[in-house]
Length: 441
Ligand code: ASP
Image 1 (tube, rainbow, N blue to C red):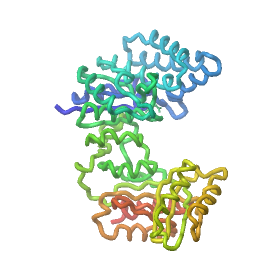
Image 2: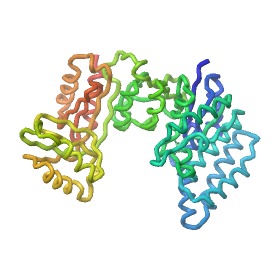
Image 3: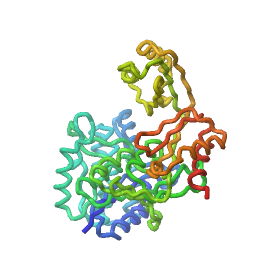
Image 4: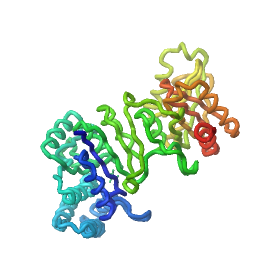
């Protein structure tokens, strides 16, 4: 029988009603054997996520030695969840113990992880499933990265003993034996890890939207939904800011060739988005799958005659960035030119001037120019490689909209074309590209 690991996000589990809805979804398909849960999120827009309340506990502990005030809100949230569910689950003593541990441990990660811990205990009680603590199966190495060699066999072994289980997301055990969390939104990563470890057929990620849209709905009204997308395409898009899923969540399942399905807890009848490994993906009708972008980049443009035959030029340019601990987004190059595209936020407070001076010294360029306030727009789709004239259409659309293209970078995969345009043209540029590929004909 096929096996699904399903993960539910914070909004999907924000209160008792939502938790019940999530539990009904879990039980509707017997293939769903393992559920990974987030902490309760926001119930309404001004609400505070339990994880943020927990960080407040940590602050209160640091300031006063206790967290009575902040924890009282958390206690109320969980008590009302259990109450709304009408569950015979005595959470009171668990909450007392949690508060006591938070105050004793004084470990921000431990504190932050308790939302997932408590929610998973509740979900397990509601489903009548086993609770398997992430601290016993997910481990981090000395560098703070997920330790797959240690974790995968343990997860596999532990979950093979449980017929059905609920696992809290977001945390595991660090190399020092203390609880450690992933970065914010990290329950997506936990779900992906569990799916990979048990070699699931599908990793379902239940959230509060019906999957990915072909474009930012704040820029284009009601853009098309993306029904199928490849891991590679998603990587290009999520990296540019289409954040439905934690960017790191695709790696564990991708290695195991396990598809991800993004589904909406509040509209389970919607198709959602299926994310497929390249092997299982056949390009569909659309040339372009999605458009994403981000503002506020700086481009450092370097020119030097015979740059192409100067061994080590690019390495030296990158060493300057490395020394300043700055990463770059793109590095388009020509025969005698090299551009470095960097997020402007890294270049504040005199860093840019220092970089320019260091580059002049290390590279002796003939010419160096800086363009600020640049937005990048990535147009992504496997179909682009097969369709002659795609880039002509894209550039035509931009020029007809009066958008000046300041930089072009086409990845060697032919999967995407990235253009650099002025920040001020960003929305106009995205709209023009969307219109060209999705609204014409
Ligand atoms: N609860 C954590 C957060 O708010 C992790 C998660 O929901 O994925 O970031």
